[in-house]
Length: 201
Image 1 (cartoon, rainbow, N blue to C red):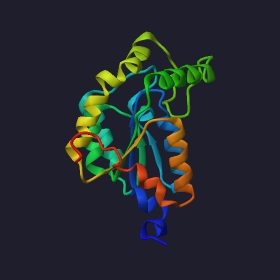
Image 2 (image 1 turned 90 degrees about the horizontal axis):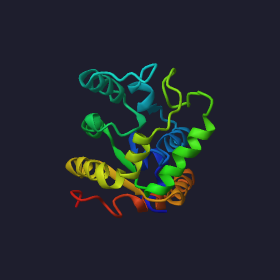
Image 3 (image 1 turned 60 degrees about the horizontal axis):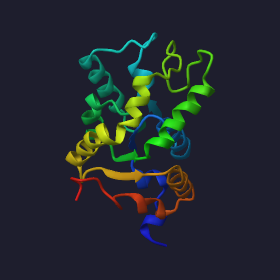
């Protein structure tokens, strides 16, 4: 058996994992799945950033809070928040980028809105912030590949090669990745740097 196959899943990915990607890509769901599988604490950035009534902190307040969140020895953190991505990257062992096309992501947020209709707050969101679905949010997802993705890729590239980078481009890839980790299968690492973002060579 190879050395990689002898490693536990947590050893494959390290103790600090950050998950990024478009809205509706499934970041929070994957974070919970990995948290349960690897025994790591899960931090949903949405639940820490927003205050009741969708009130946002100042930039410096937010950056200070993120510094506190990443100070722990181990965690899984999901969320983008480009104005604090540098803080998370400095501490992360692995970056999982859910690089899904726009249409699955748009469908994902529509399904999420239907699931939490009636003013309910989802589990990964702060209390007092009921699920919303407005035109600006849909437009952000629709244009994510064009507008937001390049900035995230640039940020990741600036920190390589310290971090492992996992690019998952379909929901099937996400499922297979989790299944192979659960089976303690080194094939899960086949997606690590298999197609690295620019700047990671």
